[in-house]
Length: 213
Image (cartoon, rainbow, N blue to C red; front, side):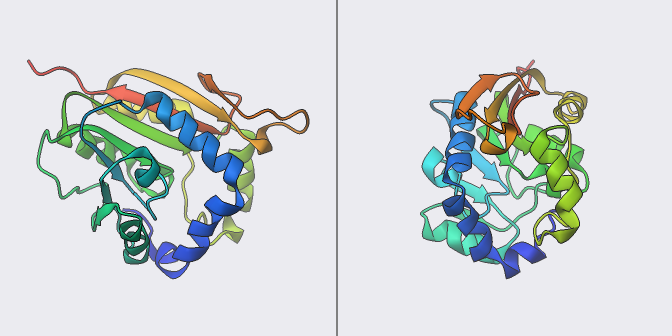
């Protein structure tokens, strides 16, 4: 289950991060757009304040924090209460599902991936954005998480760990892109989105549900 108490108490502070870190935010959006389908019905799980759903044109979000939902709704995103491990959605309804920095707040990401698989249409996509535990920023977050309101109880994952969990739940055709963020490079920084992982802190994975028999 998503640990939402801090997000209820500090929703505005969380939302302000995107204004204070405009370069990182734009790079994350750019990386997600690499894999976002051009058409089809999408949903964001762990939609937060709508900072991704709104610019990406995703009309429905699932979010356990009431304070965060209210901000997302104010941005025009239809956001309803729910958790990733028990989605209030019928089977086979969506063409794609987006989860951005959601998996680190879940006790059992496998259950969430199973739920996403259930609500996707045949050949539908799951798109997962995360801070790679093995990256420079991921290691910094891990070291400092006890001092953070939001990441105190987070469980960071490596790209390989998430790939394995996705495959275990039946997903295949896994691809990755990475966003090179300011914290990844000490000098001569140039924002960039590249294929694969291992250089950038923010990684987006896309995996596909198999075709119906």
